[in-house]
Image 1 (cartoon, rainbow, N blue to C red):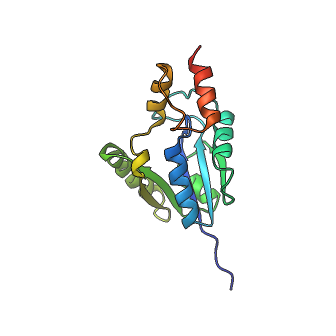
Image 2 (image 1 turned 90 degrees about the vertical axis):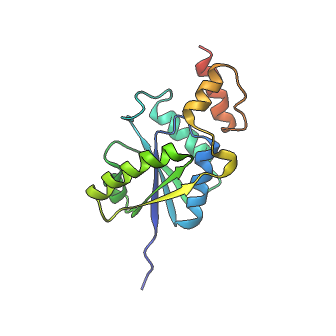
Length: 165
């Protein structure tokens, strides 16, 4: 009898991916056989993105290059439908603060109502990343703040280039 492969999805807009995202993805990669970083094409909650879908996926592929069981893929459906389409039974999300918990509780209930067979797993942010958000990093970059330790070198360079305009 062959053991079924465990697959999880880590959904988000990743505009851009941060070291906090990479931390959660890497930790998920130690728990699951395969982790799919699901990049929403057109986020509803956050409006338009600074970087287009292909560039965000490229940033992710660069950031997780050392993780052999992780790949990035776009999605533009309900996350539970995407999870089912790739054979995932688990949605993995990171939690930084109480505000994340409140939002994710609502999303969890909606997802469970749509797909009771898809479970959500929440990982607490590692302390050194608990304050990092994509929007915070973009704001730092706009005003010339130091972002090099918060994102990958490629992301830092592109943020500076994009936001200097």
